[in-house]
Length: 132
Image: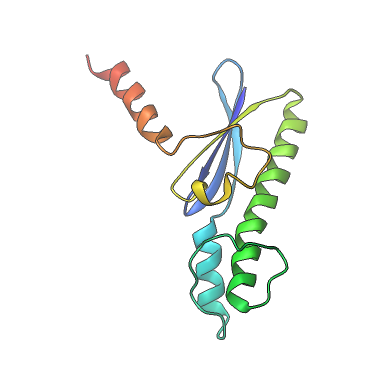
């Protein structure tokens, strides 16, 4: 059994059973989407680069936004994975992918493997099964 997390425009969590069946999932706003929402809806907040600040107690607006967005996503990942595993009732491997995964993967305790090319590997499997 495994959980696949795609960290991109949205952060999606797909739950796959031991036999390969897709059981369901979760969809949450992505890191970039969250950052854009702050920039577009809060008049005084600037557009920021998504890099983790050196500390969680920040002394300026940009670092505060970076901490909130990035570490908020880390907390979201850890909590959703914890709940998915509890509901499934067995330990599960957690694989993350997506272009923005590289930003948060080093900060979460929940992700076992980060593979930015997972979607391409999946497409190759589909191609190989259907090429004849």
